[in-house]
Image (cartoon, rainbow, N blue to C red; front, side, top):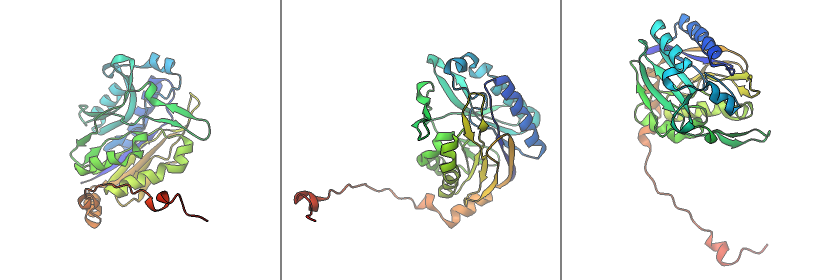
Length: 288
């Protein structure tokens, strides 16, 4: 089945209400261009480094403005709307980095909590400890939609290919990577990681991203992208500001790619041995 997909690029600020309004405007634009599956980026609701300020605007799932706005948009526009993620207050004072998928009638189909926490120290001095505030998810998820099976991931998850392989092995034809990639890591790895996940699984990859300099001072890479199962970039955005990235997605291409290179079927179990260098070790090394 073929359909038009959209990846919404945003530059979310610290105010969830303003971000919800921006999301609604961009989703309407995508729907007006014929998109029936629309994805927003990671942290659609707010990008806020100040954890105290973030907690002041946090809401639970039932009262979150991004969730309610997305539900209403899906119902009104008759689309599948995938909120890449937004911060949700959960029990124990923690936060969930949670994705939501809504059906055309506004019904909530699925949620997914980001599994892999972005705990890194970069060369430019940036240091992130997502695990200090966020509760990691424990369940991978694939949603069976009328037009395709869709696998979930969020941002840093893209560096863990076993997640995408597990989803592909149960039939996922579209893999999703909504993100807020840093500029430094994005310049180095964003496109190649997305294309690799598409190629190795014979699946489409749709990745809506945050882009530009945000109110909290961070800078994100942008370049929202839709990639086909052969690794071809079908559409992409620039590195700053809002964008609506559109592409025709023909699920028949998944079957074709997996038919040419059936690596999902050809994978084999194996054992891993480590072999000591006994020759040099026993003799105390080789004289020069």
